[in-house]
Length: 113
Length: 115
Image (cartoon, rainbow over all chains, first blue to last red; front, side):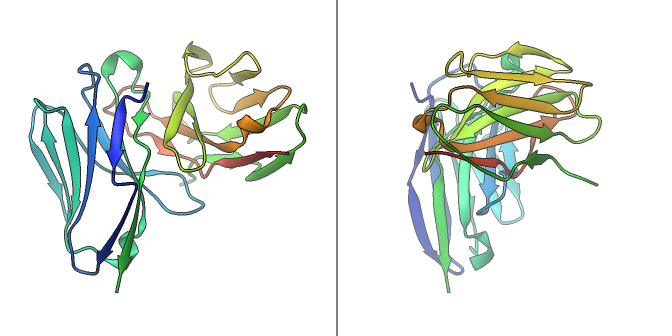
């Protein structure tokens, strides 16, 4: 049973555009929602994370929007740059599980010139 | 400072052979996690260590998979009698303590190919 569903599978955005990746979860016990960025041949690296007590978190060009009632959260990358081209994973965890992460299937983002 | 390191970076093995994958976490990190990433899929949790003990082994897919951690440092993931479906990238992560207040830092992974 996949507990975190991610879409789209791939995304092509022009430089300067907005990249939007969506995730939906099922387990209402989840209380921590990070996004990871992965470049080829590298391990994932934490990009930004949110907890359900806020609806939005912004760090530079990256924003997480969170909708607790809909059990959905999304990553917005403003002013997308070619260097943002990577695979992005959403994830979720809850405190009772020592924060083992449940990941979405990933979105391959390509930012074109 | 040094990040999480894993070895080997690539491993090709024949079906039925045993393999050992190694993880060196960040020094001082008490929590260590193993994940598996199949081609085109997200990461799947395998096992979690707090110190040298493994309170959560719920993600290990079969009894062919085992892991240990010694000296609250190095961890080894062993796959016995490998099968083609074991082909994946195996990722290790460590954090200072368990819990979402502490970031999980991932290693580069070991790409396992079973022929």
